[in-house]
Image 1: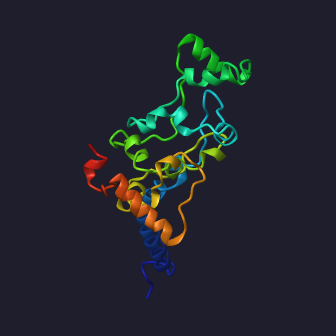
Image 2: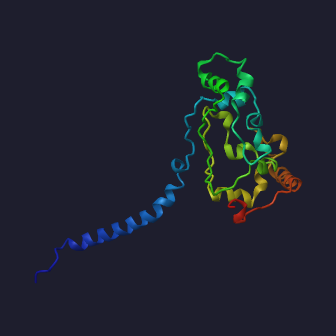
Image 3: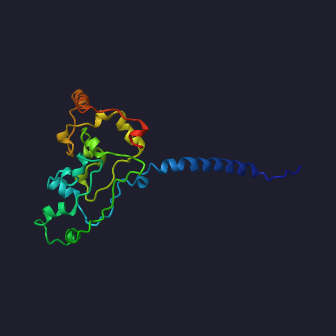
Length: 218
């Protein structure tokens, strides 16, 4: 007796069924994977800036402290971008005629600020206080990476909520003496000595394990 469907129809149905399941899975899982990629999180992608500021030269070669340019990090929620006057404090005498520094000189004499591209840009619904972290012994390198190795600054950490919570649940591992907050190379003592120092600093700075929603979402 002749069948209604050809012999290959069973195979086609199975392929279509498997394809449908994979498609539904991709629709659900795909975005979850994408939001965790460096491309979406803008990690490790240097941004064009109005001035090609080389962190390697300023931090590593000249030994300029992070807080010299980002003075607000210890006093306010915002680290701040250095005003042109800060740049000209050095470059009025160092490379004063450099073509690369023409935008800086133009900004200084015109009073028009440079329009820097923001590298670390948290969502508007996230509250972050730089001074609360810096004054509790969290080093700049913990979040910003080894800027002393960056020609152009770029984002290293994911800045995702899970990444923040990992530190807030156990902040001791990221604490250091306040004198070493801006150091790019400081490392805790190995083994038990490092654990003891972490506990000591946490007690000294009165570090709390803040994981309530209102800590960051206000």
